[in-house]
Amino acid sequence: MRDWLFFNKMVTPQIITAVYWLLLAIAVLSGLGAMFGGFGGFTLGKFLTGLFIAVGGSLGARIWCELLIVLFKMNEALQDLRQRNPEQ
Image (cartoon, rainbow, N blue to C red; front, side):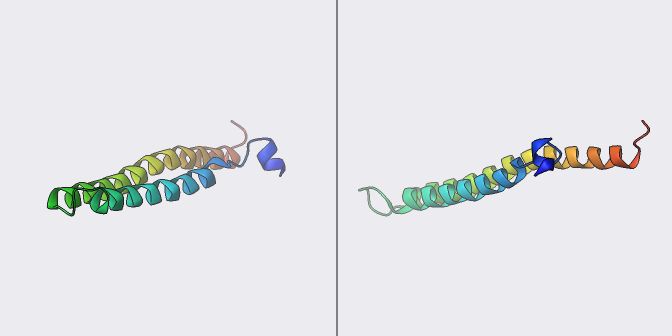
């Protein structure tokens, strides 16, 4: 608890993980909706669009969340270095 109050432990990486799973579910459901939804019937174009939305959205969400996590990993690595060399 003390670590959270003094910002020694970050809570945001856990939030980013939850946001990733939410974005992944939204991407897959949106892709399925684009594939099979609407009144136009099932066409190859709708299927490919839905597939692109599902795969592209999943990949985009993963890349975005990984970039955010890298920032926090860099912060943790810097804190470890500071703890190893406290005299500087």
